[in-house]
Length: 101
Image (cartoon, rainbow, N blue to C red; front, side):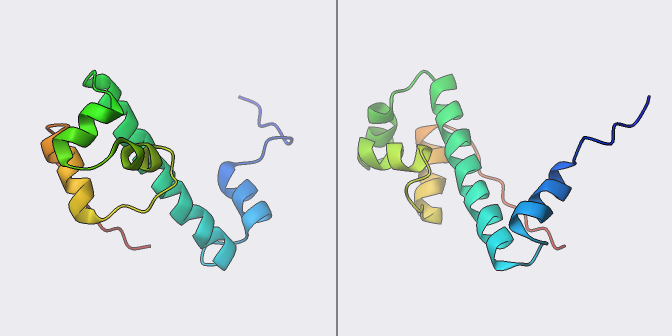
């Protein structure tokens, strides 16, 4: 397969636009992206369970607007709330890992 010179890898693109890993702008981007992924994961799990935001909120003792803000990356989420959403609301299990670079 012939390598194309006009293609940039995602990592190279991020370094060009956001700076190298460890730079303030890159760290901010990476952190915000993780929060975005979390919201998408919760939304997808809720939809797979055929639940509305209102139903999920009622199961975990919060408001629909809070669930919406989490799903749309507009709100920080406490670990205890995240655990309630996953275990009580969605019937799942939260697995957490720490990776060192």
